[in-house]
Length: 134
Image (cartoon, rainbow, N blue to C red; front, side, top):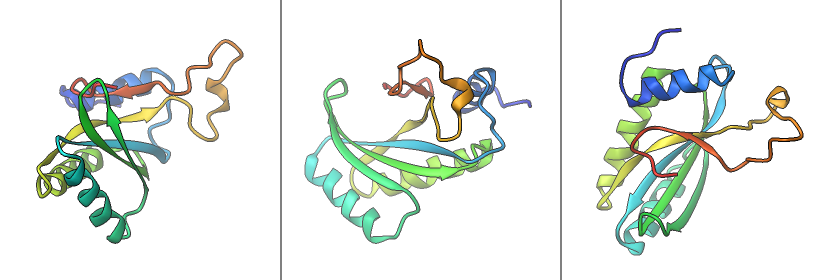
């Protein structure tokens, strides 16, 4: 599979090289960041009211010193779909003075038992795009 030569394309290539099947749905985490806690909470409430497909999580990212809204969506990690979702979420975040901060995929997904071995306990590691700080 060929990918465009940009952050998203390189990320997908890295995932493919790691043995992740990109034709199957994965839980993809999209990161939206906000300077102000009230803005982040307003965005969370608004998105929760929209019946968004996916789980929402809000926390304070110490490293970025920003509030981070994580939108976890189960989707096939197709390049065009990822770019479209990132643009959509960036526009959404902008309404609350926030912005998109990339996306990531947990390395161990349900059904990915072949990636798990006794030496690998790094469950929280994300494969992230270059501008993502996780």
